[in-house]
Every structure is written in structure tokens, then in C-alpha cells.
Length: 274
Image 1 (cartoon, rainbow, N blue to C red):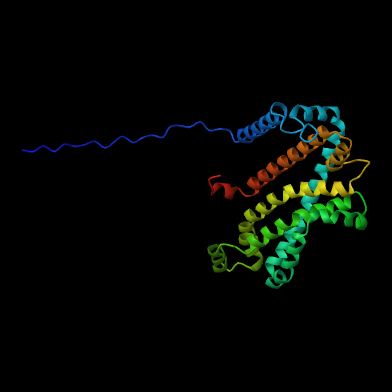
Image 2 (cartoon, one colour):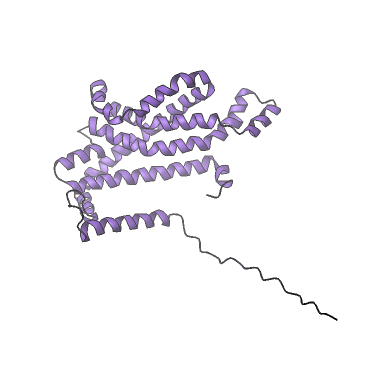
């Protein structure tokens, strides 16, 4: 009588528990690596002259020597950037809404918007001074031409790409045109709109700096004017401190925008793995 050997199934391999790394440590780690490479290239290897690329310790010293001056410029540029970004985002959304609501308007004005976006923005500098003088008007105009196009494009894309099943469901419920927009098209478009906003925000900072280069206020200069003045005086360390502050404030604003997106669009994160 033959005996049949029974082979036990292999035990299920349990995945090793991995410690979850806090999300904020990743950008901190990237910052530490960047500063280390910067210090290594300038202070140890001497790959760049201190006037061209000051080492990190010189930048810190330059900031400390002109702290009040640089921090005041940071406040000026930050307020310019925020105001210009909000205005540009609102106008860009309205333009995108009009283009999405009419294929005729989209065909008429989309090439013009592309043409305006293709013009090198630095070329507007001398003309802005002639048109608007010095101070906030030319700076705000520069911010607008820098960052409105991504908002327009993302708004049009989001409003014209409503999922078919959602549109059919709304029609089956006899939803009016207004309810269709408010309950279906707009919520479905908002993730795409926020993509445009996140693209436009760093461009707003760039626009503010370019505007200050051309038409900054000498009585209360922003970071762009400070960079011009300090580089002209050979204080490259202070100028690089201004560069660092521009980047730092832009990063802060960017993550605040991400936080606003998660607050207003909780379903997006709930349906993705990010």
C-alpha cells in the first residue's frame, strides 16, 4: 500500500516592517547634501572664485552684516509676489473659463496667448519703465505676464476634460447648466487648475525679481534691487544671501499652496497613493 506524502505549503513570508520616514526629512536631507557639495566645491576644492561663487559661510556672514536691509527686501518681494500671483491666478482662471466655455473664443485668442507667452519677458523691462514708470505697476505687470499662461492652460484643460461618466450621470439627473458646472465640471477641473497654480507660483517670484531689476523702487528696494546694488558694489556674498532668501520664500509659498490644495481637494489624495 503506497503512502502519499503530503507537503505542507510554505509559510507566508511576512514583509518586514519598515519605519516610516517623516516627509519633511527628505527635503531637509536634500538641502544638507546641496550645502555640503557647495562647501566642498568652494572651500575645499576651490573650483570657483569667492567673487563668482561665495562659500556658504561667507553667504551667512554677508547676511548677518546686512540683516535688516536684506530682510526688509525679503518682505517687499514676498508681498509683491503674493499679490501678483493672486491677481494673475484670478485673471488667468477667468480667461481660461471664457475660453473653455466657447470654442470660438478659444480658436480666436489661443494663438495670441501663446504668442505673448513666447516673448522673452526680459524684453518688456525697458518698455515697462517707459509705459508705467518705476515702482509697483511695472513689477506687477511683469509678474502677470510671467505666470498667467499656465493658469489659463490648466483651467481650459481641466474644464474641457470632464470625465464622460460624470457628465452622463449629471445629464441623467436633469442637472441644469449651472449645476453641471458647479457640481461636476469645476470639481473635476480643480486638480488640473492646481497643477497650473503650482507651475505659476515660482514664475511669480521670477517675475518680481525681473521687474525689480528694471523698475525697482530705490527707496524701499526688494531682493532684485538688492542683488543689483550689492553685485555692483562687489558684495557677492550679500547678493547670494538674497538669492537664498528668494528660493526659501518661494519654497515656503509652494508648500503652503500644496497645503491649500489638500485642504480644498481631500478626495484627490484619498484616491491616489501620494
